[in-house]
Image (cartoon, rainbow, N blue to C red; front, side):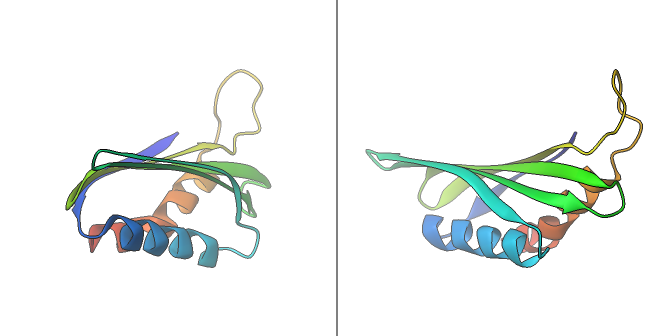
Length: 110
């Protein structure tokens, strides 16, 4: 598993849309598998789960994105999983790291 976390500043919906567009635009095989949103008393929360095919690892990997907080500060967590072909331990994480790297550059600018 690969993980990235950062405190980001800005408009919640703009941040979320930017990250979603970056992930979906990073691979022709990327898909949004599930999403959940919660907003109450100024607290904003979104969960997105994406999946894509890893050509290098020859398997599918998933990416979970969580954005939570109150305007204008939000905690961003992005974690990837899957991609290994081993039964009991991970022998490669290339696909996970590559999937995460598609969004880190943009997240660093937030």
